[in-house]
Image 1: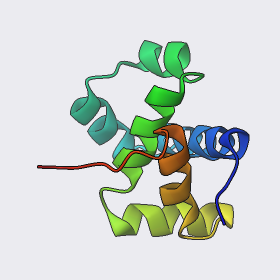
Image 2: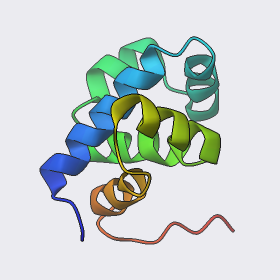
Image 3: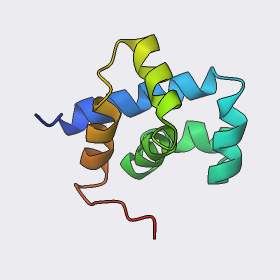
Length: 94
């Protein structure tokens, strides 16, 4: 079962909030994406940016588990939300 676009954006915003509160992961996210603290504020409403937040989270299973456990979210929801925000396009890392 797929989640709605609104649910996907809400989940991504929750992930962003979780990242901002994570002193260990936030610098990694900012460094790997090139985003600034101002970008987080300015672009938080953009589906493309929110998709990048979810893609970052999904780089490490332990991050997904930590977020999902802390927020009582099923483990498969970040992946579903990323798919919705990317328009269903598959991500190819090659």
